[in-house]
Amino acid sequence: MVITRSYPDRLEIRPAERPVDVVVQLPGSKSLTNRALVLAALADGTSVLEGALLSEDSLVMVESLRRLGISVEVDETSERMIVAGQGGAIPAQRAELFVGNSGTTARFLTAVVALGHGDYVVDGVPRMRERPIEPLLDALRQLGVDAVSLAGTGCPPVQVRARGIAGGTVRMRGDVSSQYLSALLMVGPYTREGLRIELESELVSIPYVEMTLAAMADFGVRAWRESDRVFVVPGKQRYHARTYPIEPDASGASYFFALAAATAGRVKVPHLGSRSLQGDVHFVDLLERMGCQVIREPDAITVIGQRPLRGIEADMNAISDTVPTLAALAPLADGPVMIRNVQHIRYKETDRIAAVANELRRLGQEVDEYPDGLRITPRPVRPAIVHTYHDHRMAMSFAVLGCAVPGIVLDDPGCVAKTFPDFFERLWAALGAR
Image 1: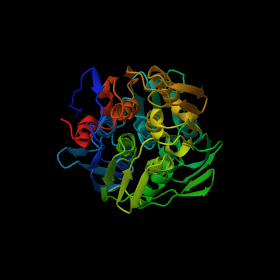
Image 2 (image 1 turned 90 degrees about the vertical axis):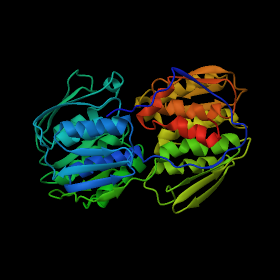
Image 3 (image 1 turned 120 degrees about the vertical axis):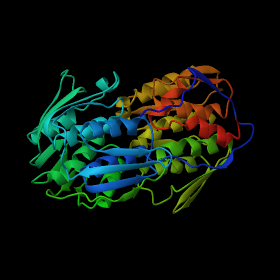
Image 4 (image 1 turned 45 degrees about the horizontal axis):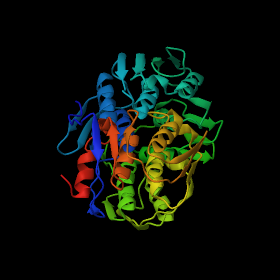
């Protein structure tokens, strides 16, 4: 199965003719979809994932699970996935898994296949071969798993010669990606002795780990955070199949909340509220500091924008996927916007600190780049072609800026298919444009 939408090589974004005033229905969370796919695949019985995201990232996960011998049916019309869980078993004894540029798929499945008995290879696109996975491989080796980076770079392709995981105590880094920890947590219940995971450094993107623990509990297992840097998962547990609703993607919602800010309009996103499992819902806290009004309900969030926006300083470690979104709003602010404590986003689909700085400068902004962030001083926006670096979040973020100022043309807009294939269709609908 592939994403069938197509976009031109370059796409001009035209400013909104009036402030937006819309209710936006959004696709399911990528992060929750890929976690739920793993948990359902390991569970006893058949699970139904409702409102699941159909994007490149989720579909490479689906295809990889199928290559491992796990049945996954996808109904595009109803946005539903039906997963035949294997009770912690990996049916295939040999598989080559292509994960594209999906970090969650690469890291989660590297741990999952270690539960099997066989020889498995995980590989992806050239950029994936530059994205580190060595902290996870080192943790697996501490547990007796034969897991190596085939090129010796600490990045994919990865080979795992698996004989199951006995369990025990591991020490690992937490400052590069939270996905390593989430990967270990999710396979922990199927170890014989359980896992005690001790972090050697500060954990980045903490809300994603909290999301993992909550999803695991939803599928019926116990795991907990014992202290700031210690996590525990008892062994000999089993996930239980269930019908699991996937809430809308909070990272995707950030672009539409930002659209309200950029156009001094109003955007409401239903089914994504104050009880969300996703940390990125707190992006609206930053918009509130910039002068927007935010209405938080248990099952919806509304943002009402105003111009000009206020400049702010923000530690975005916990919501780092929304860094490009805030950066793209910075030219509309009345003072500097400072983003800090996000050094780990240099290892995403692209080096997002460098990429954002480059493109904002191309648009005439004054940007100071630091190892862990950016300081953006607003200047009049200069028309330019914005390079997206094959990074979906770059494309969507700068599209929002283009809705407020003229002259922005996106190079490779189709990269949004990674997590949000119909982003532009929904954006045009929000603008009331064809």
